Amino acid sequence: MPKAIFITPAEGKPGKVYYPLAVKDIPSPNPGPKDLVISLKTAALNHRDLFIRQHLYPAISFDTPLLADGYGIVIAAGPEASKSWIGKQVILTPGRGWKNDPDGPESPKGYKILGGTSTFPLGTLQEVALVDESEVEEAPAHLNPSEAAALPLTGLTGWRVFVSKSGNALPGRNILVTGIGGGVALNVLQFAVAKGCNVYVTSGDQAKIDKAKSLGAKGGVIYKIKNWENDLKKLLPKDRPFIDAVIDGAGGDIIKRAGRVLKLGGVIAQYGMTVSPKMEWSMPAVLSNIELKGSTMGSRQEFSEMIAFVNEHKIKPIVSRVVKGIDNIKDIDSLFDDMKNGTQFGKLVIEITGEQSSSKL
Image (cartoon, rainbow, N blue to C red; front, side, top):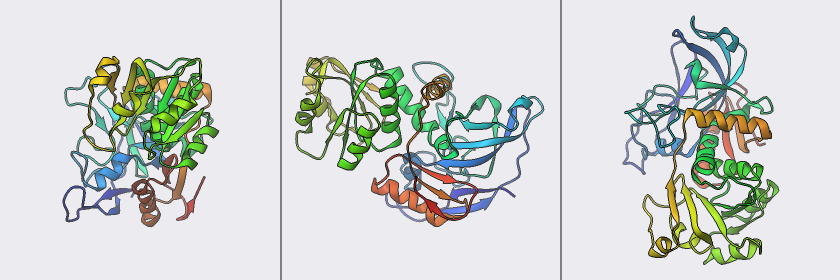
């Protein structure tokens, strides 16, 4: 029987508990009319997976395999699905219920993300999965299996927050990406560089800033330094001495700090608030006509647009570390440790089939 990884119950309050992982057998797939049977080869972590293990995420489930990012090969198709899919390498769309509305999910039940919750029964940390043929994209040929698994959720989130929401995906614009090193921030950096923007980054680690510069960032600042925005000002070009848009996943005091470098009418497009679930909105931001735009995940249409852009510009997601084997709980746990400690630069990937060994890319 195929195998999958689930969280298992443990005692503890939300934020204090840390649910253990367990490998379990799952039923062999029986495809419906338009289903594809996919042999999953790689899957990747996102911060939501860590939150699920800490019971800091809604509707967690002990009966749904973990993870939302997955890459695999189609090995069979239902009677009404196109047989042309068989043998193709594909990546799965990471959510359901949002087709193309620019404002948000059309489904009255909201957006359903794969992996680890009761809202949708599919996760990608399993050997074989059934997926409707409308919910896959052919994997870009220039990506290896680990890179392909690293793309879906953060790529979609980064595409929407930067391209669809910021209004500044244009050549010559100055873009600030906070918290470089996470998957979304790195995807935004890559998209913005490909769009011809001048990208600046923040991090608590100079080594991560240096890596970002090697990927095309113009420069960066350490956010742990008091009044880091003053250091950022010194990096900006003289003919455009301001930031056009901030792409932020942290929250905290970003309004105060970024407001001092944003142009009048500048945009803060925010896809997360890792510092705190609340932040202060200030009167100086109002007087500067700053716009704050929330953004989360993205639509099926935006997913297709993102994949096409990745293909066109031969963008390769950054992979921090790979471990091998769905039975390899010890090394899979170590990926979660990387995320807890914030040591990763890029995505954390599991090769579902393979020897129980760890490799770093």
